[in-house]
Length: 199
Image (tube, rainbow, N blue to C red):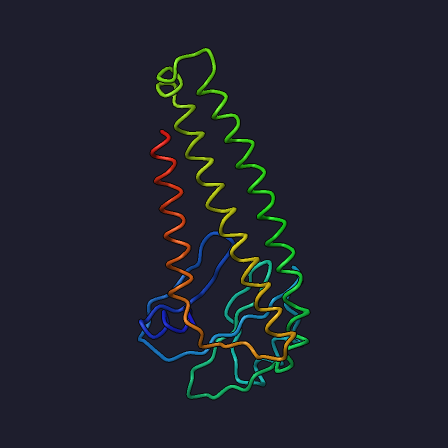
């Protein structure tokens, strides 16, 4: 729904990776986007053909998913309509999010302990501040804390999605993305403000 809204404003996805997405400015259009979750597997020609036959065009791929799009007026049919089958494809991404969240959390805790140790060491606090190690370390802790929080939020979202699919409820492709987007940004700002307060 986020990609569809951007397309209605004239921004069309062309590529994405784990950090950035690239968009192309074109005349606005009403688009439907679908994302196929994968286990790091490349896209087969059969999959592309299946989507093309359903009326969807391949857009781009990431390590964990492939993106397809079609204009709304094309009325492309849905490829995957079995919620329980979709629940199985969500499980890999759910595990990845949990693993990444744990890695970022452990890294944040270790870095926080190092920063705390440098602050309460025999050297005066302002010495560490002037040297820049405390400032940089606190900002790195904040960076890892934000990523940790986002990974666990992604894990929670995928867990809820898997549960919903297991109950036979289909994916809501028109779901609003603004609320979750705002939550992520509020948490990120709070963590960064806390880091600035410590600095």
